[in-house]
Image (cartoon, rainbow, N blue to C red; front, side):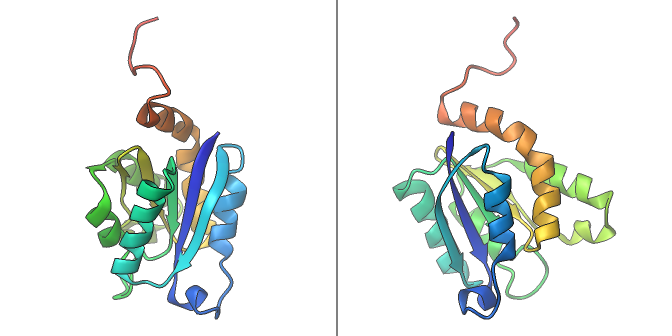
Length: 163
């Protein structure tokens, strides 16, 4: 079981003007993968987003951080930049796979600026801000997360070994 964090980026949710349904959907969908140990709603402020990601990765030592919201083209969509500012290494295949699968459902998927990467032994994945988008994107990545987190954490064996 992995230690998981969820960060919702939304000015309205952070001000109590809207319920965070996408964060709740993530919690439900990752239940078999691990325990959600940290959950926070933050405004669409890049400094607050970055600080939260750093705290979750460095202080709480989470294995996985899933973000929701702030990946579009709005001037207040700052999640990708905040994530890029704190990760050590990109994991572009995750965002590419999500966009490829999402494009089969809607051409609007090409407007996503979501990124994924690692900070130390923590994997950070940006997801869209809608419940539908969260469900569709996690459907793509959940089958490989256990293996990826196992390797990243050092708990798993080497990839590509002949049996």
